Amino acid sequence: MNNWTVVAAFTYSHQAHLAKSKLESEEMEVLIRDELNAQVCEAGANAIGGVKLCVRDSDVIRAIRSLEKGGFIQEPLETESVWMNKFGLFTSKIPLIGELAPELVLILLIALIITLIFIPLAITNLP
Image 1 (cartoon, helix red, strand yellow):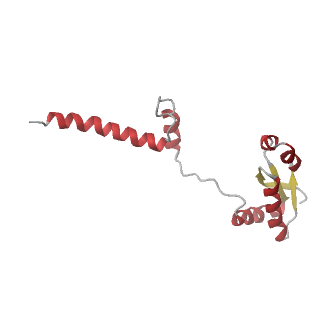
Image 2 (cartoon, one colour; image 1 turned 180 degrees about the vertical axis):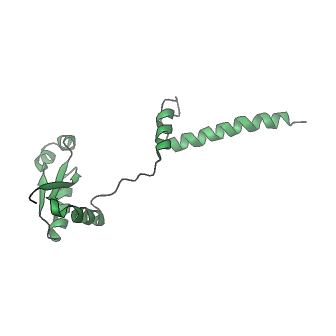
Image 3 (cartoon, helix red, strand yellow; image 1 turned 60 degrees about the vertical axis):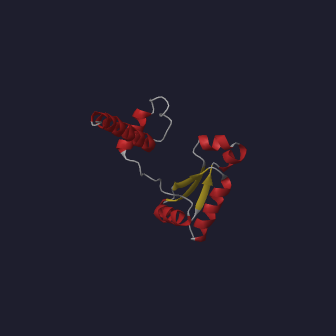
């Protein structure tokens, strides 16, 4: 049980120290790795995964819950569906609208389809 596990990674060393203080206040042993890289070169720290906050294997779950409650780590929002991701990849190749958000492209395409259906109907129903 002497192994250390990374529970969070930060861009700046001061962020890691704040999280470390939070965990130490809850009587957990905490170790910070790769701090010097962030102090010397921020890009170098990000290239190796940031400043890492490590705890003992026995404290991993408790540490993650504590950091989530404290706002130090957040769960990624997975609101996009697989279908919307595929649609975004497909429409990214379309000129002019390829840089827009997939949701906006979908709305534009639906509006275009509705327009193409109703304009001919309206023209054929003219007296």
